[in-house]
Length: 231
Image 1: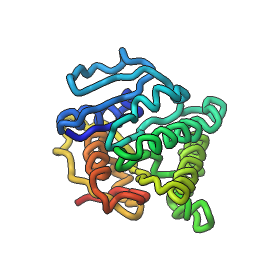
Image 2: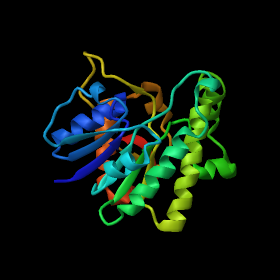
Image 3: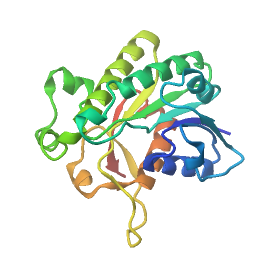
Image 4: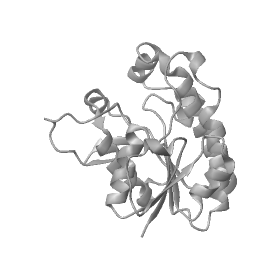
């Protein structure tokens, strides 16, 4: 049975990834600050209590797992609400744990935001105009989060060069829960560019969960900055 270490299991995306992974037969180890917030009970699910700075617990979560998925994120609100380098410091601890478990870990997927700039964009090309405009206006409150995600991406690039770490950075469009009258979930595929049409319409957490689990198993997606397209 495939094994998965999951971080962010109590968030909306994390709940969807957890439910689908168990449905697909994964053995899941999830690090959660408050285990009581996880309503799922399953013989193949192990909950490990700990926060972003719990180094030993992070290592215990990753140990022996083929795939590592992080769909966690920091608080959203004013800039003062966001702890500096929250995700960067967490991912630094996480990549150490992954490297120590390198004989079993095949891929690490980190979920950033659609508005975050990839390292190439950060280095000079810049964001597409529409993305930059959205980030500069209606999404200005997300700036601390996005800067943290961008720092994580730079760290993962450095790790790829230094240690050969295999990772995917997922940059999904706007997320929303499916409405009761919504059509069945679409089949999504990895994309190499932002789809503004898809972003305007949004995707559901269930759709993203399916894409996330597919991507870590797809070696052609490894090492990419993964946007989203419809199949």
